[in-house]
Length: 149
Image 1 (cartoon, rainbow, N blue to C red):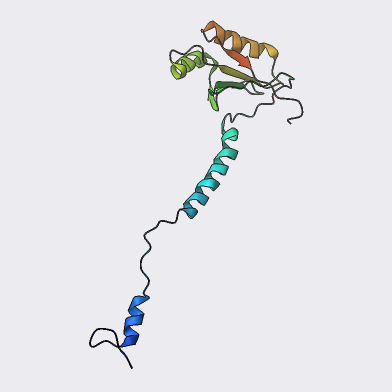
Image 2: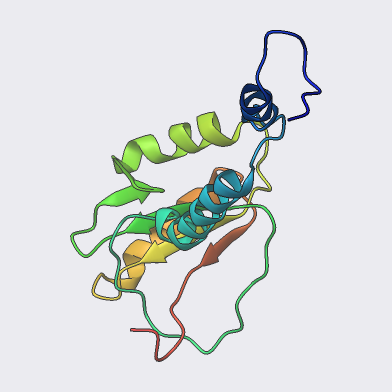
């Protein structure tokens, strides 16, 4: 029997040492990419639902939708006549000071007015008049496309 190892070692011990597992020096990023893709899908689905949280029954309109890159400020009037900035309820006399505090020196920021169809038209127009009187120049009404209910 021929032996090519160091003195005092048998041939079997030499083979066992040669095939021991060595630590991997590479990072497996596949699970991280999978998690990131799942999070991306969740945020893509959830983001449109988070824009305005006040339930308002908007009237229908056949107007074409606006394509804006800057997110506007939404002011809503619900069926009870309560006023909201985004999804925060606010008193009518506090509306203009709060908007000035939020928008600062940007009176040309687009403001969307969402009025429930069950409230009087005059309440919506009165709100829009107060906004333009305060110096906000880009005030628009929001409606719902037919068939979206």
